[in-house]
Structures are given as C-alpha cells and as structure tokens.
Image (cartoon, rainbow over all chains, first blue to last red):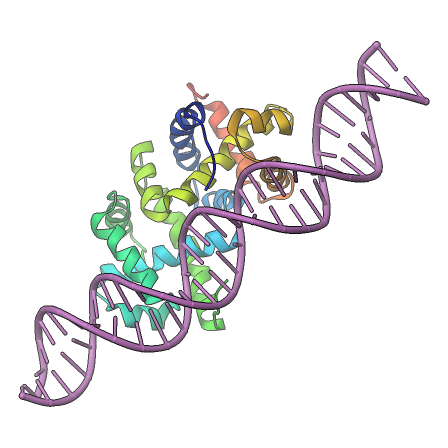
Length: 106
Length: 106
DNA sequence: GTTAACGTAATAGCGTGTTAATACATTAAC
DNA sequence: GTTAATGTATTAACACGCTATTACGTTAAC
C-alpha cells in the first residue's frame, strides 16, 4: 500500500505499542468511542463495529447466513472474521471472555 | 459503502458502544494489541498507527512536511489528521493528555 | 519587494476491504 | 437416496483511504 524504508518500519513497531497505550488510557466507553471516532473514518469504524458484532454472533454458534440476515454483513466477510476468531491473535477470544464476566453484557 | 436498512443502523449504534467496551476490557498493551490485530487488517492497523504517530508529532508543533519526512505519511493525510485533531471528537486530545501524565511516555 | 516556509486544496492512480452472486463439498434429516 | 443446511471458495464490481504531484494564498525573514 505504501513505500516504507526500514527506518520507518522500525519506528512503526514502537508506534504500535503507543497506539495500544492510547486505548489503555481511556477510562470510559465514551472516552473510548471518542478516540475511535478520531482514529478512524466513518467507513472504517463501521467495518470494525461490524466485525465485532459478527464475532459475538459467531461465539453464539449462529450460522453464517443467519448472521448475514441479522447484520447485513456479507457471508464472505463473516467467513474472514471467523478465521481471525479461530486462527487470529486471541484478542477476540480475550475480549469475549472479559465481556461475559461483566454484569450487564449483551 | 454498504446498503443498510434502519433496523441495522439502530443495531449498529449499540454495537459501537459494545466495541468500546471490548477495548475497555483490555488490561495490558499486549492485550490491546492482540485485539487490534484481530479487529483490523494489517493495512488498516498501519493506517491507524500512522495517524496516531502523526497526532503526536502535530502536538509537538512539527510542520507537515517534516512529519512527512519522519513518518512517510503523505502531507494530504497529515492535513486530514490535523483536522480531526482540531475539529474532531476530543479523543486525540484526551489520549495525548493521558499519555503525557504517564511516567514513561515517548 | 523577494524569497522561503507553511497550511491547504485538486487531481489522478493505486491498493484493498466489502458486497453480491454463484458454486461446491460436507454433513445432518427425513 | 434425497433434500436441505452449512462452511468455503471464486469472481466481478464498487467504495474509499492513501500517495504523489502540482499549485495556490498567507506569513515571516531578509
């Protein structure tokens, strides 16, 4: 997507941690939403939100085509999200577990 | 980008809060990174990381073209990030303040 | 007054994530 | 055995964020 020399690549690795720390610094859902809406374009945020919705439906064992009806997300994308959920980085699983432990989760 | 009926739009609004709560549930930078890498594609994550890097340089008062040299991000994108920083949702400002209060910030 | 630096804007091209449609192999139901 | 549901794969079309380039108006330096 973009040309980048090794110097920039190295700097970017450190920046990835920095971004994570920015999210960690948020204390409420409102604050987190504000950061998300500054960091992402509306289309991007919609994509992220869609994926997370799909993750929760997948976790419930809902079949792809039913998720599609519920969310409007294409079966193609749902399949990709499912792949991230199974062979990803564990972030989805972790978030799911934590949310379940929360008193009022959906 | 996508066709969506009102029912889906309404459901999506609630889902936006849910995504924020997912991030809130992360406790360490590693956990946060894992969630980010599951939620985003590599290209998207690079875009988010770039924006956040740019924000920090802008906050230091660095001129656009110098930021471009440091980061490889185009002046066009830098200008857009600057607009979000000034007329956005306050998420950038908030994250900047919080990070500055942290002992070892970059 | 000239010059240079700066933010900003306009354009074209490119990469890539999403959708829709179709199809296929597997599995379960009857 | 047939049928239907399911996950998966392929294709074409589209949306959109990013880059590079060029240019413009403003401001500060000299």
